[in-house]
Image (tube, rainbow over the protein chains, first blue to last red):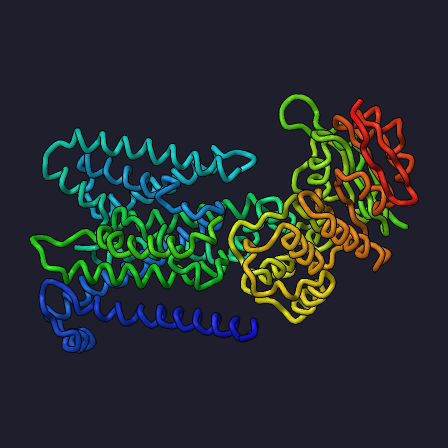
Length: 340
Length: 258
């Protein structure tokens, strides 16, 4: 077989897998809509909604199921996109929103308001706190990295912020005023999409949209970064500006996700890894692929969470890790010869 | 002949002592200018300043008589290409993708490769003769092949000036000669092209460079035609070596340390 032919087959195979991935999103979306603790008829609910009939089915559908499914999509996109952007920017396959301490700072800020009981004032307090925490962390990283914005400096500052905010979160937990608060904080930290309404969706969406529009156009820059920072500059990119916009985009995406769902781990790290073979390791093309993959994976995980019977609903972060982890290991095993 | 780049009174430092002290130089069109000097002389730092990767502390730089600050980054990138030492590629990309990255200055956020991009890339691949490497992953190539890919990336940009940092380091003699010949061809093909090459191999410098700059502790201590810069006295004083030189053959062979 000539090289050109095998190349073509590879390309078709990649397109086929991406097609499957694209198709999985609406599929999982509908499965997600059908899942839940009560049985409702989607068709009659939609009919009632259109006719302005406030039936129970219609309410459950429009106030619980639809927002939750849409949130899963948006959070999946945001987390995976952030991970892909950071891995490309820092030229490091280990990078993820967790690594920079951005999500951990969001968690800490939210735990603080939960701890002081401010959260009971309004539903918006916790997301607002988490969002601010994430943005402050990003600003901190960027200003501390200083004039040179060296990749290693950014990673190290991120690790430090991560350690500090984790410790402070644990501290807040051990001083928690009562066991109920402790449980609330704990569940919130693990990341979950249950009991979310359209309020959370409308809160997070503008930040996420802004984040996506900051990250997606940096495609060529991320490609150029595979040749190293110096060469990227020599290719005409304003390194400082590009980094600033990317980190801001990541902070908005991660902050908004953490704000409404807690800390859903592993998606940001894993999804870009899973999809890298489909784009020949190109960090630029990986962005859009990761966005689709993140949406699909989180929809699936959150659907499974609702369909697995148990004394109480599982945390979705547990499923994403349990589902993706083994596959992740398999992929690393398969591609280890490339990672020299 | 016109000056592509003019630099005057460049100074630069990281911490205390100046790494570059009052450097002034002209890069003329049509020439291969070699920068030589012992390790730590400031060659790579100077090249990065010429490539606009680092900003000098003081001094002025012009590209075709226009100050660097007045040139937009992207239009600068279209004219001046920089080849990093060892030409690292951080992800296992396909060879054709690496070459296509050379066209980045011509692309906007959402555009794909245009017809002109494609022609330029094909031309670059022809020039370096690496068609057989297409479809392979960059991390599977030898260092010599990687360097040829990097050079194709740079040729695809069709730059006026190529700034190359030790492009022959860690290569076998065949690839050393090939890389230098390709850089020489680039400047000879078009009268307004030029190349600046940092070199450690004095024979390659003698053979392929039209002019040389000898750097020592952040200063240019000698410049001009190769024979005068590679004089026995200079080699003794700044490299601390005795050499056997035969400029007809393009040979400068280190014999012993002083």
